[in-house]
Image (cartoon, rainbow, N blue to C red; front, side, top):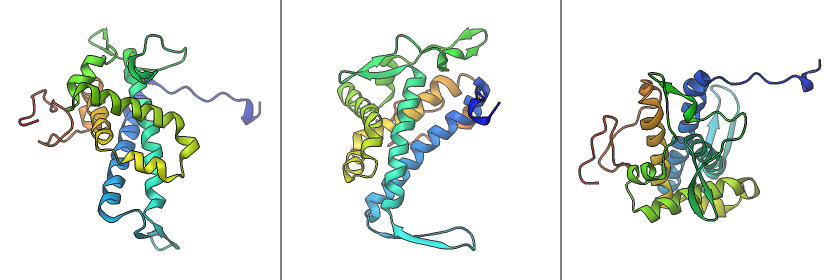
Length: 213
């Protein structure tokens, strides 16, 4: 059988926890990091890329910002869908039916009990912004991901990505994955979340509320 006709090996639940989810959360961190660089230096600042002692490449910061922002939106949508959250007609909605072959949070078990999808109320309670703003930010994130391939190189996408509320929501997605999956599985070390007074969410790793948020 040729390589074109072979079926790829199915990813396992352990691989999703060990590799897939940490990589996607890492992509959100990378997106936020490059946006902070853009805020500080501007997209046209010159950068030089080198691979050890190999050849270098000179460009500007936009070389990093555009693909990393695009990837961040795609990973954010995937993480929300994994937790059971989607968008429809401009509203944040709970996923009601999974497609066959989907692997999601409810496929994991703790002490014999399956985990539940993250509810809309849990999302709104976790992210430290008004409910309407959280909904707008997450719906915006999902809708941008759905359109990202048509606009991946345009300045419009990058400009939209600079919305501060969307950045808060992106940090909130990481916290939700941490709290509702990794912490419950006893694997919190795989996506450590630093709790700060300016953080986007209302709960720290140990579940205590932040002061002043």
